[in-house]
Length: 400
Image (cartoon, rainbow, N blue to C red; front, side):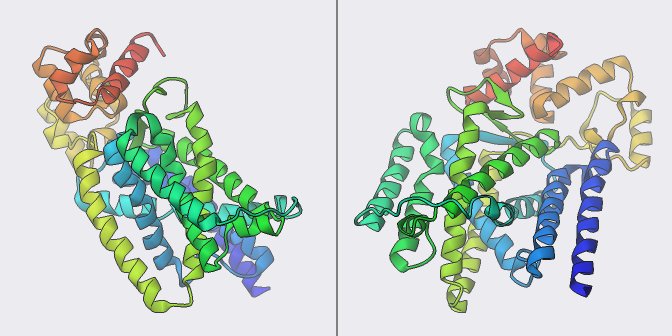
């Protein structure tokens, strides 16, 4: 009875935390408004974990293994961040300029990946556990699975603009082949037993988490924007519609990694090695993200020159630190025009100043540029990123 009460209180806490995230975002409470994505995801993880625990009588995420799980999850996701440096399929906007806030955000945001998919899979497992299929196996499965996974990785590196979807497949093949060979839990082992439940639950959890990732990212200030080749239009939230199929496979990829971690759980030395490697790899990746994937930082209020000095001093005294903390009702008409250009799809202060230096005074002026001209002005050679801002400007001008 005492344990159940504990889980109920955790459910209540998670709901309050979730609502607090929305409150701080809409009230523009700095620096908390930049961590809306974190409060949304961790409150979701707490909620589902507590809900599952009311039946199982134990927490699967919020236990002594949580620090390891966050580190492993962060390192796991950083594999894809490294891949993205070459692919350039997404980029980050409006990140906190302070490195302590930014790295904390990276660490705990990427640290939600495994807990979110794992707990969602556990919660939804009952939907699929009764499904049975005719048992089958693939002869020499580990060899073929790992070989194809490695081959797909090389193909991605050789033809990134065309074979980027393989990014969400190659690691699943390598991991599941390795797991099967070592006798760990694996999807192929499930299929040889005629039990596809884990496979289906993993894909389902990937899709559910994918929808939530995109929804909460869409509402966030610090967020990612996609610039995927051939799929620059027809988006739900920020994600191109075909991209949602990738979440199905990513669910498999993540659960395969969890199966690997469970397989080595008996070796503390190996787990410690994985944790150290994941942490060091994550820190190195963060520096590369800052250099190659971050497009803009949240403009610091002292760097904004289009707001009158007296008004600027008032805002500083009120505790406003960045442009996103400003109540635009306090601004003049021209200041609002400048602010809209500054904030357009996370354009950022540096690009804004470059545009102003070339006589681009507002979003309407920006919408009249072509992609070559804008590329030269803001010094951005990735034309897919450039087109994101031209389309956003045209949409704003046309009242979209």
